[in-house]
Amino acid sequence: MKKGILFIGVVFTGLTSIASSCTKNSDISSAEQENNPSESIDFIHGVDLSYVNQVQDHGGVYKVLGEEADPYAALKSKGVNMVRLRLWHNPEWVRDVYGEGTTIYSGFEDVATSIQRAKNNNLAVNLDFHYSDIWADPQHQEPPSAWENITDIDVLCDSVYNYTYHVLSTLYTRNLLPEMVQIGNETNCGMMHTKTKPGFPNLLVCDGNWQNMGKVLNAGIRAVREVDKISGKKTIVALHIADPKNLDWWFTNVINQGGVTDFDVAGFSYYHIWHTTVGFDQLSTVVSNLKSKINKDVVILETAYPFTTLNNDSYNNIYGTQDPVPGYPYTVEGQREFMIDLTQNMINAGAIGVMYWEPAWISSQMKDLWGLGSAWENCSFFDFLGNLTDAADYLNYPYENIK
Image (cartoon, rainbow, N blue to C red; front, side, top):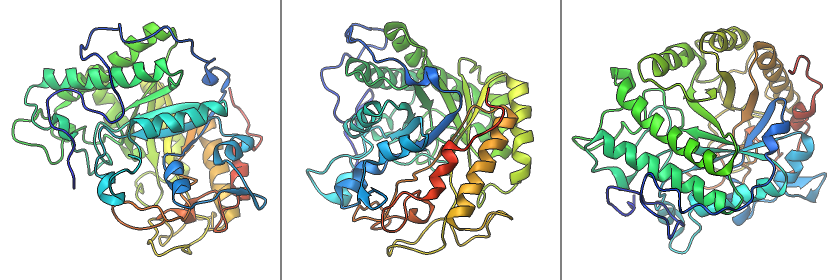
């Protein structure tokens, strides 16, 4: 895997002429921002569209009733009101996949392009900072290569602050400020704790290192709040773990032991094939109890469900060979009903949103580190011909009790 540029500080693709001080705000212009789309949202119907640019660049075509369509506009017409986008620190490894001259997908400029597409459709944006050059998830939380030689927690906090601040301040100057920001992705056992060099600050909360974790999270949050002061807006700050069984343990400890309180959303991933401790019919109780205990809003930041067990390419699918949730077959109708009931259950529990992971990762000639095409096309809202299916109708279902 090709590594990015190495130094202790801030490195990220596509950002230039940016001051390095963690306290200076002079690099932010007085650019006027658009009205905040999230201000009119009663309940977040979100979708992660991080792969769309890559799919379309490599032959993927989205359709509505057989006619080519913009997936942002197509999903907006169904009721989507927020788009989630992942951001990697310096994903130079994309060049190992496609060669020199490629777009650095999920790097800064690619994400800025996606944010613009969302803004063009008056969609709010959730910007998901992975704080890694590659996927961050419960098993993988690798520090960016630019930070791998750090041995002082204060230096790491300064790097997190600077990076977060400069990404958001640069987006602000382009009228692309997101409405929600995730400080980390599926940080069950912490951030930046796998494949670390000796001496790297220990953020492994599964070993009790909540104070270091709290310092890093607070550094990222502080950067968001500093940009808020300039923009005059209140960005929604979300923290994100996987599996509802971890909600009470993680958020109680991050608040009480990590000292992290200035966040708005307790977010989690729910995939029934991996997250089996809390049953589908128990989710509402877990969410309701957490909301009451920590007095924070709750959002499902990732979920999905298959509409078929078939493949549309040679890339083996991740989801679909496992047993379905009883009552929800792997059909378009089953996928729609699963999402309707999941959403209504979350509304009843007091959650404020549900985001679907990669409903537009259809088959194409795109590549990643593991295959060609899609490992998720059977969980998409677009069929194997690229047409938007009736599963997306869950988005405009007449839900009850939305506050």
